[in-house]
Length: 293
Image (spheres, rainbow, N blue to C red):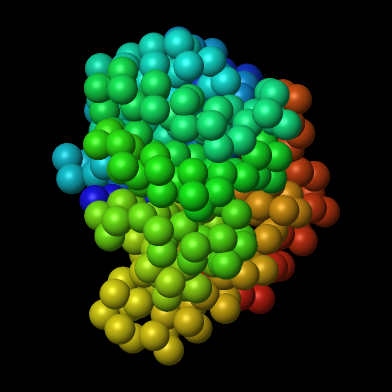
């Protein structure tokens, strides 16, 4: 079972190319925290802008630099069943422990129960590592239902879901219909505490790139049943999380990483870096939450 806090790690670029030295620096620093592992090629990793060759090399390097106890999850989903199977198995050879598979969405109006069961089952049948469903309706406009997740949870190689919806009712329904050993992870820090209260096993959180200690502390305090202290951290994370998701996105996340001493660096085109006024705004938000000085 997957538990704990995972950052969907950003991909470090310099002059539009991946800089693996900076990736190594970030991971060596993250290794010293209580993070459970790393998600490579997630939405915050600008995976849509990466070539297939870059994706495989990223997995190889993350595996190489990671502490031995860290779990490596690779975002390998595409609309094509064939390509998803191929990339997932190549990522497994490169060192990934789990495949995070996005709901197919190009024909979004037709991606209903039957189609999603068919897609995920065919992929799970053929890949060499366990499958995690990735539900992120804000990007795909496809929201997988609790009934569909429950059916997929019966597959021996489908072991969990990252649910990036902030809808706690939907999350609660999913948790109520899957086995206890099926890992339901929240996909955004704004709902980590409420997600844990309804049975989530942890979270894959953009904020954990820049402030991993706070995210890990929130989770750890909750597990120790220090609910008041855990909730206090959650309340401090709401506005900063909104800043690096809804408001400024990946450019904002990379900017706050730079301010925290990690390497965020520039985004890859067509995304655009923040200007200084925007950086000042995001810095103020984090300072007001006592997350940076």
